[in-house]
Length: 402
Image 1: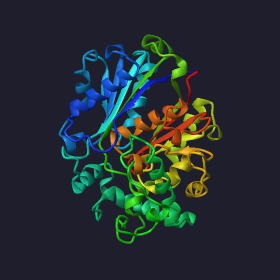
Image 2 (image 1 turned 45 degrees about the horizontal axis):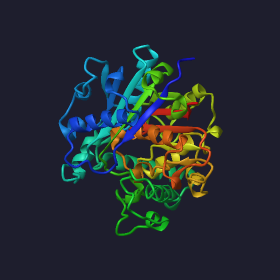
Image 3 (image 1 turned 30 degrees about the horizontal axis):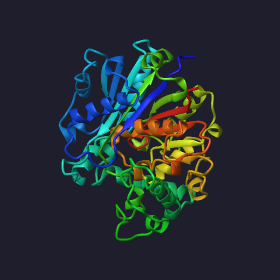
């Protein structure tokens, strides 16, 4: 058994548009914001990690660790930049946990962020498509204009055919998540109200993305700016920070797995690497899927809302969509899944996504989310963050710290 690791503080921006904020300003706001949550000076932090994905291509900025080290109190400390596609945020947290468990400190900070829009808040769809497209295998790019929507449109078609699921079944994921986002002050789509029919049917705002494939506008996550940061600590670290265990959440289980980037090598619907990581996280936590009644999972597209529900063990293989249709994923259901609004309605600032999953889940377990979204008697939470075509998987299981 290793030393227990706790989430001592969480902080995030509103998801949507960061406008003129520069990358150095984003990192400074992330670190300053999360330290402020518990009135801790950054000098109390021993190790750090920062996850982002598109900074080279969209922001022309590398060596993000050096930007974090420019914050007073952090210079000369072991900090690294982490990239694991859309699982970069989750990976950044694991990287900090590993350092703490190796004895390189007692307090760590993990930041995840992405600035995908320009200083006016506009997005260049083609440029973003290229920037994200590099996270696919070169052999699977030809003939695809928007690489990831195309890949997941194929996964969606495959899921529907294999499991006898309809477009309307999958539309439950987006309609429920938009409803949750309406009550989340941090969500990008908080002001957008949609019905199940809006999400299921073709309309002015809901069009097919790739000819001949079922993916529609409302099946897709958002192009988002945002940042999120978490302070994690050992018991010794909590004492240093002056944070009581009762005010924390324990990262009781965690695991990571990476499958071949080439989809042709594996059955994406079965998501074997993801399932392996999730079962290891449950095993480490000493919990089972039945113990969990809060989950945040990586619904970059609605089909992943269904597959993710299966990966976290809330539905058997092929029954993930049905779980949403039956109302079990709602705030008052068997397990409140993506009560934040998920990537589809809360937003998907790629590097921040995995950090925000743990942060929101911690807030759920601590009773800190808006009342309309609060899962009653939140006992334990599971998170599932992916990168690429369900290639990289970071899974965690959280429980109250005391």
